[in-house]
Image 1 (cartoon, rainbow, N blue to C red):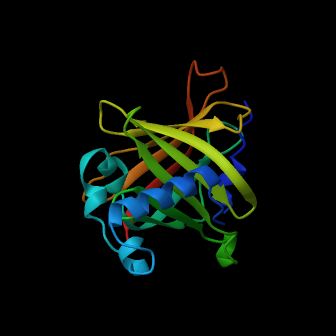
Image 2: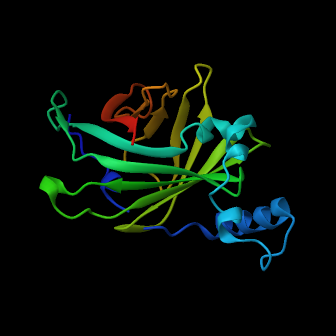
Length: 206
């Protein structure tokens, strides 16, 4: 079995899907109750977090903060795990609860320059009780659509919607604790019959 790490994990620069950005703008205006001229940018964007700590938005809101990332990837032999270069991952609350946005900032190899930055915009859809997520990255600009739902254990499971992936993949955010939280990407080589962990993350607060 040959396992290749998804290139998007090493890439990144924010280009959000037009439809999601338009939704974000409309929601901001409605929720703040002030004109664009009257509202200061810190008030409108990411200085307030209470709204991300309430209701279903808290599913991702509980990850808001600045995190140091230790990572490891499964090698092509399907057995050996090798530490990665690590990263910084910053989660922010947008518009006091209308979305959660994060910025993935991987370290460069051997202390070299960082390869870029990636960003997710995570919006909760109350009608369908799930998350709609837009991902983009420096070396792969464009729109990757991901959906996520919280499972019975309280973990968040994400599945790719588009573009199609050669092998199905899913990501699980495990419930955070005082010590931090864990994350795993799995891939299926039999169209979802079984899942193989290929990339793991351990996050600790900076």
